[in-house]
Length: 83
Image (tube, rainbow, N blue to C red; front, side):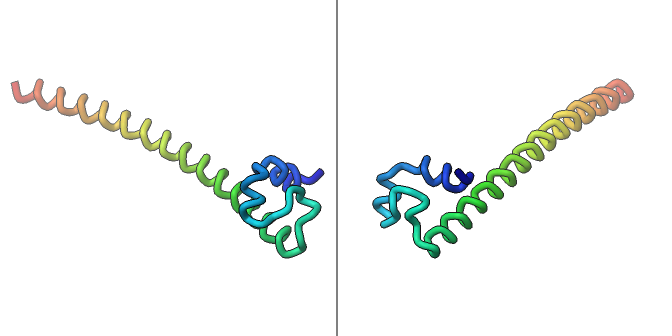
């Protein structure tokens, strides 16, 4: 069983029925199969991209926190010098 076949099988039957698609992957027409395969491949790519973006956001948040700490330290040093 291919990954696409398994993923298609996990799609609720009602969704497939409402779209006019057959219940089973092997019953798809060639054109339907090409479309389903393309959409499933794109969903994996999008999921990978989202994961990478979430990691970058987390890294950015850590850097912001570090910078805020350094700014606070510098402000404290300036206050001590002005006293």
